[in-house]
View 1 (tube, rainbow, N blue to C red):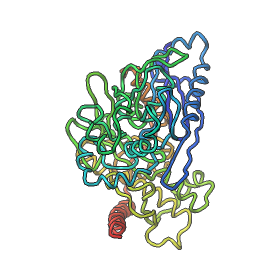
View 2: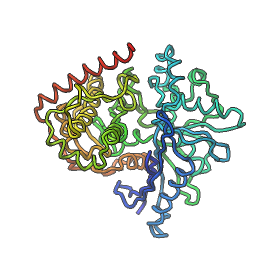
View 3: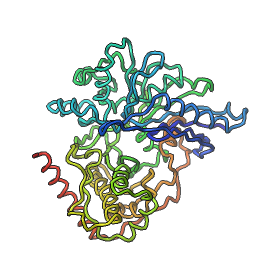
Length: 470
């Protein structure tokens, strides 16, 4: 029996998983990692803790096989959180914290580049945002300019330095989230680097997602695919993506749908699905910054220790929640703005925790729906597939089905990113097991929900405009 190893380094944990060549999960191991927030707009992780967690997860997973079976791991794929960056010496010693994708310390630089926003969007496929890597890499470069020769780049490049002997390289999907990749030429852009004040000689060499990334040190396992986590999740069910939009619901939420060649929508992201020596495939991508993080915000504001266990009942019981202006983390697509703080409308003085919690859940659904409305003008969407931690909420899935008027399939496999990068590492086999008989939520008439959605969109536009005027 041959096996495939997937390494999935996420915001809160590092995982290593083994799959057989048909896509069945054989073994896994998880090691938690820490995220700290030293300031309101900063989110950091310890690179040494991350690499140690990955190495531990890999070791424990490989050791779950017999000595004879370990020689049958034929390939490895690596998937990581996107837009997380750091600096390190050529010998691999970190020179900075890993600055999380959630970190927006580069916002002032992004604001100063507003006049160049259209050009940056055209070259990179991404609107100006401090969530992407470029402004954070500039911040690092300015503070480390006296350190001599150093390396700058995405987290995946740092991990490859420690896990293999391949050198300073990065895949196209993670490179694109730096906002420095020319999407037409799939290489670093001199004009973009000049805009952000970043030297190109410190960045890793770009390679296709499916390429030779060397072998895992101590194991001799070839690394044949490297991919950003959301891009990898698109491939989690093998090739079963026809007429489907994938929604991943974690701390943030992402909506992915196939993009026809040459069809660009400036309000949405252009995201690289996969690439090899023959070329690249692209996706429309929408992003909601405040998903799980918005519920975490509520739990902290209200002092609710058991929000996750109470939400299912609240979603069944509450029928008339207020509206929540969900600006947690800023507004993602298609607004791309940083308006005022999150608020409930109308005044929430007479509302209880249950009503406010349901309002937050509905705001996530509303923001997702607005992105789906944008996408459906350019690509056919006949069903939705949801994954991630929040997809476990039946009430959220049913509201999404009711509002979108599309069936919602819930992927029971919580390891979509790992499964997707394993499929890519295996060369995209046709006999990969697609998920069958997924839990399905059929749309139901829900006029009050439709009405709240329209009110939400109108109020959110007003709220954003009011804050901009101030």
